Length: 252
Image 1 (cartoon, rainbow, N blue to C red):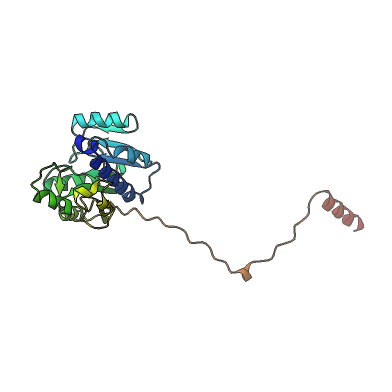
Image 2: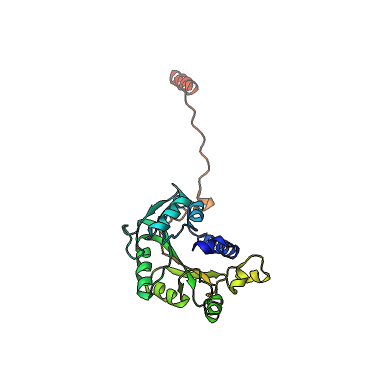
């Protein structure tokens, strides 16, 4: 949302989101690897993904959002029109993918997750605004006077949907743990917005590491030292050996 990225509180929160995403993807090989960003929106995370070293392709279904992303990224990424539940790519076309969940019910989330898994060979990361967080609970109690930054999703619902795919290893982390007033970096409560490996932050990431094919590494050959033969004397060759052979033949 433009209003969210433009104010101080939104900018501070976005910085924490970017830090969390960068830390989440730190374990993935990046140089020379391809990554698909699904539902890129205005491209607020696209520069970070490109700077991480990925060969980046982004998709967005809304044309006005693609225009904004193009203004941000220029020629650094390929920008395509595509819905998150129907991606125009072959199986395992990318090394990995980042899926930003859009609005939708469990069926829509399930379709988007399975599409991201289908086109990725190494893993995916799913980002979303968490409706199970303290900040969202306070937002609801206050009657939603100010807009929520994005479509909220239940952490446990998203986790169950991803786990039901029965692929790879899951891990999750979140940020913006405190109330919204603490998201501003100048607030004394901003220490409660740091990264946590708990589902209580307002913005979370669930990462799936797909198990790569195992490669067999040959064991080194072990030879006991006492079995090794000593060095053989070098055989001389050339004019000296030829002269000695000639002298021996003359004596005979």
